[in-house]
Structure formats: structure tokens, C-alpha cells
Length: 421
Image (cartoon, rainbow, N blue to C red; front, side):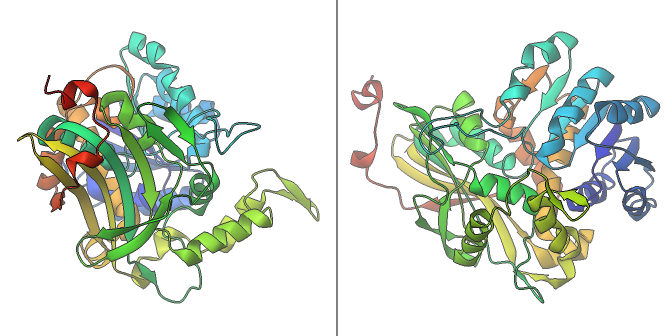
């Protein structure tokens, strides 16, 4: 398989480091707007035995991406850029006849008058609208295949297939105890994307109400994360899982919450108050610049923070319901990445490594024919068990933490289940 990677940032570099240890790819093309950065990533895996090369690409141009894909007869395009660039890369993959994978969907547009009540244009809606075109072409587009969204969705599908006969609530919960030395404020992931998802109206799904929105950072709760991370306050954030999971998994309620921390939330609120989260370009002297791009330019590159980072990051899915034995059950399926381990073994900081790991696993399943099909799909559309088995083969197994089950009387059971039918 000839794999074209668009984006040689932190996740792109981690993707290359991971796929270089596997045997299913025959060629890896690293493409970025910055050729020196693409060459650096290509050089980092040049001794792997995999054919590797670097290319210049303009991710905002469908034609540019298409030409690179055609030049190398790419079989798959892996989009590891910010979601802002999804539309042209997605279109280029369709045009070039490639399999497509990204780690986050096309951006959303809040409702024009009631953003904290009603749904506007949702994440990825433009991609899923092209399902029939991809299906007719016999091509597969897998969107939202990072860690969150991605692995968290796989967890939900696995729980529905193997752990529960009835699910009341699914809550994706993300938190960590990572510390970056030497910086007062240093996000460990792309700040452009972080601002987008944290300041947009969060989405909640309820069976009787459907999808609706709420205010940013709403419904704070304390969630106790495993493996020494401990309790963190988590708040609602806009994320794909709340849109994806109900499409394939039957549940009463689905939420997504981050353990952001008070300081991080206050910084984001301040950026919003000052208008520094805006993507609309303004004139500064002789230049036109987006305030959000300016903020991103002033912060350290997340890919370069590994040597200064300490701690762990945890991504997981918390499920409450009735287990396969007919008794109440509550579990947290999760995956932890420790920065010291990912730096030692891959030379990548934990957050970008954990994100990059999952599209590699998914691509290998597609290459082997284990995951197959056509059209535009999210991770829940596929059998979760082969994914989790292969994840363990990569040396990065998931874990399942049993939690004290809640009372059956607190569940909003459908009448057919409650009556014993």
C-alpha cells in the first residue's frame, strides 16, 4: 500500500514513526507546505526499510493534493492537518481514487440565533452527505479516526457488542496530568483546533430529545481517571463522538467531556472575550492576519514539547447500563499514554503519539481487508474487536475498569426492557 500523509506536524511525525515499524505499507509519502519539515519526518524513518519520500503540498488546494497523490500512485491519503483543510483533501482523495482517513471531521457552524439550544451545521455533515458518491465509486472514507474521536468510538461499539445488553449512558471522558516545564501556557495539541472545539456549543444526545446544544464548559463533574491521574473536573465540549455514536449504538444519553482545568478554561474564555479566537482576518499594519493564527504562532509547537513534558494522558469511554448477565454494570474502557514511554520508544510526545496510533491501526485493518466497505463512515461502523486486538499487537493495549454500578432505578429504561419483553 502506498500511503500519502498530508501534514508533517506532531501527529504526522508520530504516524510515520508508528507505521514504519509495520509491514503493510510499501511506500510512505510525507507531504507538507514546509518541505524542510516533510524531509525531517521522512529522514527520521529512512532506516526502516520502508520507501519514504518528502513532497511539498498546499493542503488548502484540492489540485495540489491530487497532483501529489497522482504522481506517487497513492492508494490511501491520511489527512493529519487541522480540520480546516478537510474539504480540499477529502475532495482530492475522491478524485484520485484513494482511501481516505482523517482524525477529525469538517468544522461545524453554530446556529445563527440560538447557538446554545439548537443545532446548526454539525461536524462532518458535508462529508457524510457525500456517502453515496464514495459508495458508487467503491471508495472508503473513514472520518474521525484519531483517539478522540476514533478509539473512543471503537470502545462504544465494543461495549455494545460484547459487554452490555442495554446501555443507558455513554460518556467519553478525556483527562491527564501532563505538565510542560518552562511555559506558563503550552497546549499539548493544536491550539487552533482546541479553540474551535472548546468554544463552540457542545453537543448532547438524548434518546427522547435527539441532539441539542448547551453553553461551553457546561455540566461540570468530577471524574476519577485511572493509573494515578486521579479526579479531574470535566466539562462539556463539542466533539464528534456525540454525533457518531448514536448512529450505530443504542443509548439513552451520549456526552463528551474534557478535563481541561480551571486555568486552561480561563485562558480560552479570555481569548474569546478579546476576540482572539476569531478566524476572520484583520489588518495589522501592512498585513492581514487571523487573530487565532496569531495566537497559534505565539505558542510553542506541541510536537517540540516532548522533552519538557511529564505525566500521562488518558482517553476513554464510560458506559452505564445492563450487562450481558442482566445485572447493572458500569465500566470505563480507556487507553493511557505516558510521555516518558512514548518519547523513549518513538521520540514523540504522548498526546500526538496517541492520536497518530489509531489511524495506523485502522489503515492496517483496511489494507488486510478486515475492515472493508465503501462510502463515508465513522469508526462505529466497523467491528471493534479486530481493532482492539491489533492495538494490543502494537504493544498499546486498552484497559477496562469496572466501576461500582449505579442503581437500576436511576436508569431511563425503555418500556420493552423494563417489562421483561
